[in-house]
Length: 230
Image (cartoon, rainbow, N blue to C red; front, side):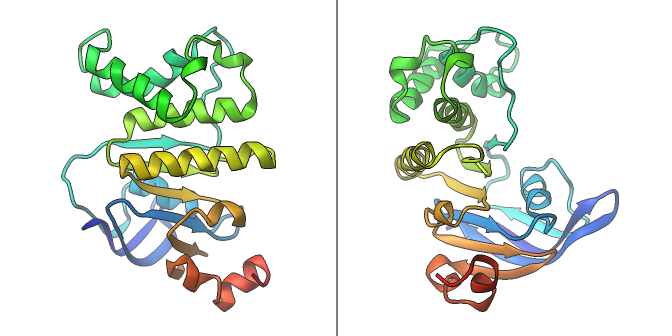
């Protein structure tokens, strides 16, 4: 089932187009990797898809009129100025669903516990977030995004700053969450190893240079020029 359909999209800031002529669709549960050079419009696109920016032209059609989106930015709130626990950081992803209620209900608390278990960080739930390793912090912030993401998860270079081992563990956990929660995932990356986790690739350079399965992308001239022969 098509979850997002992009039609002749032009996107940018202050009426200035950074991207134009985008046409593609993503099915429910697919994992899309967005790649391209710096300044190509990758962040502009995900901000437009997540309604942080309005399209300049064209349209974005969603299968659902209302849906919940989790967003894991490259530079996240660090929580380093106050002693928040892992549980508190993760459950902050549920805040938008509270309305006028001051506290999580039992169902929402159980959801946080399920996500902690899924991400294999249950034993850290009472630990102070600021004392964690970089990889652990990134996983906790993924949990926070998952609390908000019933339908769509957007990731902006989620392994930035992680060493190889921490990055491999992060993607192992992310793929586990993807398969078990049946989320649609859109990820910006500059890491070809990270791109291997995706089923689809969108290569941008102020426009749509490639869209399709990763096994087709690796054999294209644009891939080999950008990444080197694979």
